Image (cartoon, rainbow, N blue to C red; front, top):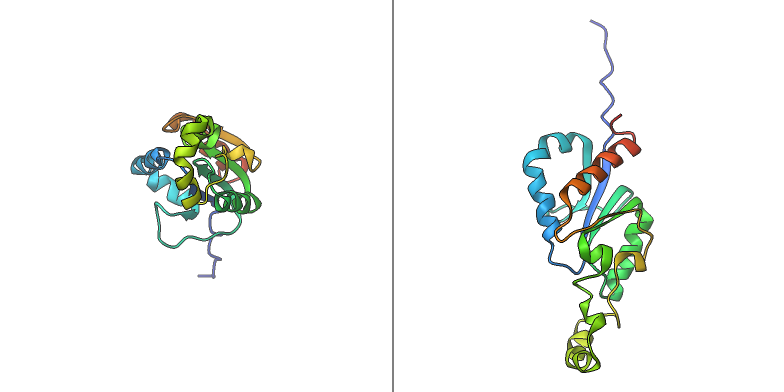
Length: 168
């Protein structure tokens, strides 16, 4: 019997899931979606970085980075910019990433309220104003909601799988 070459490994969508200032409700929805879709997704998706799913995470080239949460510190902004450099496509996930709210509600506080929270702003080295994701980096798509709109998230996954040639 002649030696036949092993089939080439299936190309997978390289994905990162990141969270900044928020309640992480979209992360909960994301993990709940795994209950139904894990067997399919593990064949199609290479989760490069997803702290909620794995201990060993890698910050390298990604096809898609999903980012949940608002940016409230200089380190958040720096990390978002690093993710943007590594990802071909960035998707803002949930209300805080898409609009900033409710995580950035301090931006609308009165002078008296701002003064009252100033010790916390200083303690946690917050920016003068919190930011939605698009205020710091280019965002290619959004999945709004608090928690995220599950159908729109799944549509983005399907779109990315096709866009990056994982499925036809």
